[in-house]
Length: 334
Image (cartoon, rainbow, N blue to C red; front, side):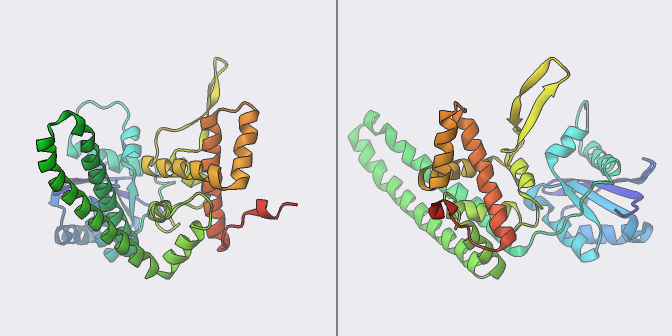
């Protein structure tokens, strides 16, 4: 790890950036300043900061706020400034007891977080354009699916509304649903185009789809969440991120609970993996055999399904690491 002695914290919002800098003695080096969240403003500010401080000894830290931090990523990559994007929840938990809230205090807290965690901070890199494009399209896809489900759920009210009104509404409602489905297909086509125009993403996508139970949408989301498998170095890390890795729950001699999964997770990926586990239980003979065996042993059904989710994550990392399709070994058993 580099010997940083300037720690700059940034509180990110859509319109503005609140910035504070401290040294390794927790003294304020850069007083609170507010700049606009624009590439030109960020570039101008940090060009001056690079003159006032030694660039290689400066570490900039801010919360991962999705697209709102994209300008920062771009400028820091261009200026070759060391930066870390940290989970907002991690920053929040590090603050301890807090009374009141302001953007200035948040920026200072982020700077102090960087100082106290300097030995384990992992430098970030800008999101690759194809992954960013996939993430935006996938987000739009989710919104369209939600809209379709919302309009379809309105049909449950038909029995309680006069037929004359239903007839007028049905034409408009069906037209909206059909248009949404057309847009959904357009987005799916765009996602497929991005996947198959990038050799590495195509390889990962095809490898993941060889695993029984895992479908195309889960494969796409896994590529997005792992940033084409550059974000996590092993399956355990991904399992923790998904919220399916069990952790001990005990303290002293009085609390000896069962291992539990954490509530801090990518809920979308966890839901997708749950669907995959149910599919694998149905279509993968090896998983079905495992499920039935554990059920006969008296294991809890949700515990078994969580174990299957972990198995699927391990399989994903195995096929990616080996660069070979998954083989159902149960087929070859004598």
